[in-house]
Image (cartoon, rainbow, N blue to C red; front, side, top):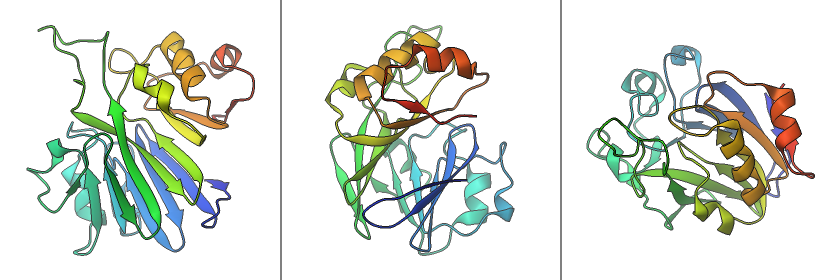
Length: 214
């Protein structure tokens, strides 16, 4: 568990594995892409808010959701999740949703280089979301499944970022370093990885960015 101070109060973030996060704030439990293969969600608290970046099975996992959803749980997702979760509040890139004072903005997350055998990207542009959670000016970027895309260059004031690092679906070490240079978060976690060389990754990052992985 990692704690961070924001103008809206302290947030506690637990990395549950893969792309799954739990954020505790002001007595609320916020889950990102819950995935039952990396954590036992029957042991987790009920969710007040769930963020889903896209509809792939390791991000929209009905088994995990079954344990944490209540009737009043708020779900924010991309449009691809709506069919399975009709109660979702759908955001497309550039749109925002306000949850109890937290501004949640959807941003682009997609592949350019990495593609399926049919030539289509694993994650096409416009399909999946990344999210920026704004806690009164403290901005948390959850990148989703993405490469180092041009739109990252327009992201500003990111205090904390979670960015993926695995091939072939997201980023190589080199892509990751380039993406970090565009976003320039103050603190950073690599997530959604199969393997990681932390000393190597740290050596590739720009001055002023703290890689928090241990």
